[in-house]
Length: 248
Image (tube, rainbow, N blue to C red; front, top):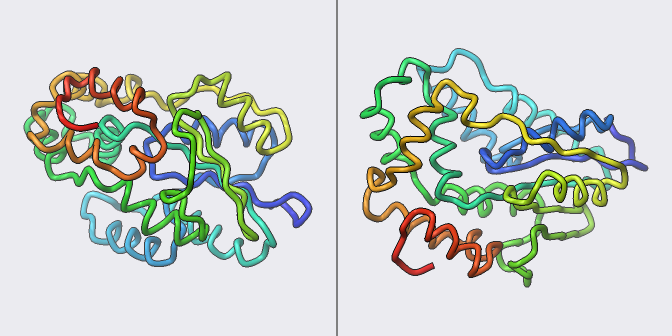
């Protein structure tokens, strides 16, 4: 692990925001980092309870095991650096559901839609409010930021934080991450949905969002993080993409 002269670097995200590309690129640049979705003690416990209660899971995911390791490490370092990515919520939420589908549902489109309709679109805000902010002690959702930017920097006495938009190009991500960690990092996109077993159903859902229910898009567009970190122009572009007519 890093020493006190070279603080911890933690990739800490809500999930399904292309964090794999950044994490793997940092490892390739010889940074010993973790890629996590939970760090607040209450959230680690809740996630563990969910995994133990899930009959379709036989093992605890590595990211939760790593959450416990990093929680312990945080007490050993004076300061840590956190990289988090964000993504527009419509496809982010859909991707999160697909990530947790068992392969047996590959051709059960009705059950996939049913699971999507049960998913809470507000989970990204819940993650910020109950995991990210309690962990870092930085209320990024209330900060004064320029939403037209592709990244945001925050700091306090324990953390330096970089929030980076997934929608930025790989070249731009490479530039921003390299500057943040003080060393050259080449970010290359990985873990694309069109390479997964569920790629056909994923593409079909993306073109048929009316299946999600009438209030799905409205809930996505009302999310605090989406309004905080994405400009009017960016939110309008997402609205046009999905033929959304409500308030942005």
